[in-house]
Length: 125
Image (cartoon, rainbow, N blue to C red; front, side):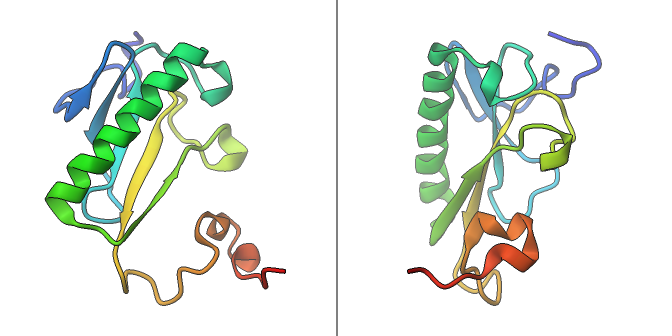
């Protein structure tokens, strides 16, 4: 645990297990945007143990059920940023669970590919 890390000072926990917990994102991009965070402080997914990753995915599944019940989204984007070049701003692993709603974006085709907007749209082969 690090005193300078906002995720190490978690509060308002929605669900948790021995290795991870979930909180609503303080700056949500959609209703219900949630972060799944390991209890051990480390920067990104590549530093997690197998046990930690399994626990994180368990929490992602539990969060999905909670969000289905609370908000009834039409879909989800799930992902994490690894490193500053990928957009990571807090160097404590966190998985974004972003509920998606029909019409929340003009054309969502390409999904997470939108991190590089000019590459988002493509023609599947």
